[in-house]
Length: 406
Ligand SMILES: Cc1ncc(COP(=O)(O)O)c(C=O)c1O
Image (cartoon, rainbow, N blue to C red; front, top):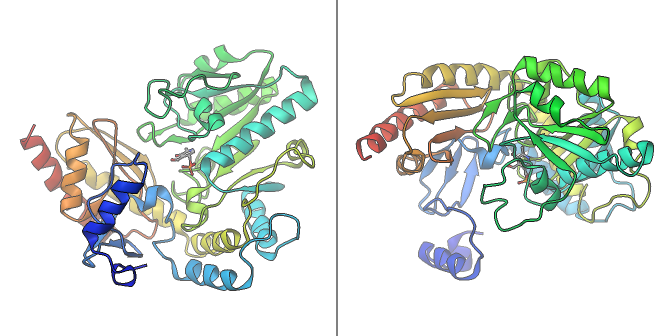
C-alpha cells in the first residue's frame, strides 16, 4: 500500500495509528513505505541507513530479491492448509535446517516467543515423560530475554522490566542465575532440573556475549547432570554472529535450539530443532499450531537461508563486524563496546541513548536504544565497511550532540 493508493496524507496515517492502535512502541518519526537492501525509505522516499534490521530480522537484506520471489510464487500456489497435508516448502526447509545444524528434527512456529514456548514445553514433556512429574525445573540467566508470552516471559530473568511488571504471577518452575557465572548456575541445580536455557549473547539485556569458559562449563554441567541445554538463537541465529548459530562460536552443541527473526527474511516464522530422542516427547496431540509451518513462510525461509549460506553472510558478518567494532572505539564517551559479528552494542558513560538514537534518526541512520545508555546495532548482514563508515560518522555526530546537551 502507498499513500496514493489509499488516498491518505502522511499525517492522516499517523493520526489513524494513534487513534486506533494500542501503542506499546516508541515509533520512529516517519512512515516506512518501502525497503531495499541496506535502506528503508520514508513517505518522501528519503533513504534511512538500516542498522537495526527490523530487530535482527532482515539478515539477507531488506526485501531480498530471492525471498520476495519465493513469497510471490508461493502465495499464488497455496497460502494456507493447516498441518494436515504434506507441503513441499515444509519438507525442503526441514531438510535444509536440520542438515545445516546437524539436528534430526524441526518443529515450526510463528515467532520467537512461540519457538521458546515450544522449547520449554518440549523440555518439560521430555522431563516428565522420562523422569517423573516433578522434573520440569528450568534455569535461565538474569538479564535474559526470551519473549512476551507467559513461558517466554517467565524464562526471562528481568523481574523489574516493563515486559514483566503488572503481569505476575509468572509460571512456576523457573529460577535465575548470574550470566557468565558457572557457580551461580550450579547452585540452582536441583534433582528436578530438566533444562538450562540461555542466549549465547544477551541481546535485549544489553549485548552481552557469553564467555567461552562459561559455555564450555555449562555444556559439561548439563552432560554430568542429565540436563538439557536449550539455546535461544532467536536474535543471534542465522549468521549474525559470524557463524550460522551463535553457539557454534563456542564449539558446543545444544540439545534443543530455538530460532526465528533472521530465518524468514521478514516473514513470521520460528522453529525449534533437536535430536530424535528428545523430539519423540512431542507425540500426536502434544503440541500444535494453526499457522506454524505456513507454506508461504517456509518458502520464504528456504530462500532466506539459502541466500545467507550461498553468499557466506556469516563470514561477511564477522569481517564487517570486526571492522565496525574497531572503528567504534574512536567514539567519545564510550564505556564499553560489546558484540560478536554484526550484533554490536555501545555502552556510553552517560544516560544519553535515547537522544543519541534520535540524533541518528534525524541524520538518517536507524539504531535502537537499550536502557538509558546502550545503543545496539543489528543491521542486515549484507552491510559493507562503507556502510559502517557512514554509520560511524552519523553516530559520532549524534553522540557529540547528545553529550553537549546533557
Ligand atoms: C533472544 C530472544 N528470544 C526471544 C525473542 C522473542 O521473539 P519474538 O519477538 O519474535 O516473539 C526475542 C526478541 O527480541 C529475543 O531477542
